[in-house]
Amino acid sequence: MKIAEARRARKLSQRQLAERAGVPQPMIARLERPTNQSVTVRTLAAVATALGYRLQIGLSHKRARKGTSRPVRAKAA
Image (tube, rainbow, N blue to C red; front, side):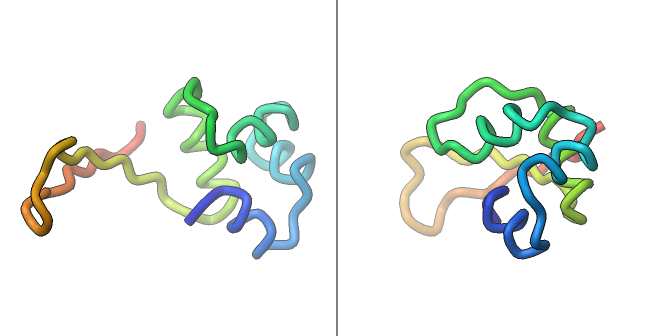
């Protein structure tokens, strides 16, 4: 689920989510932009926790054939 969708589902403003996650509101705005590429795992984990989710990080092959990729999941610290 995308951060903005999860935030709206919980009827939270960006400011409210930021306060719960312990990050500045502009960080939430940046995370909700699809072009954002620089964010720490710690920040993502804090936002996920504030939304009631668990952060999952996965890897897959760039050129995997359909049905052959196997995601690798890591838990955030």
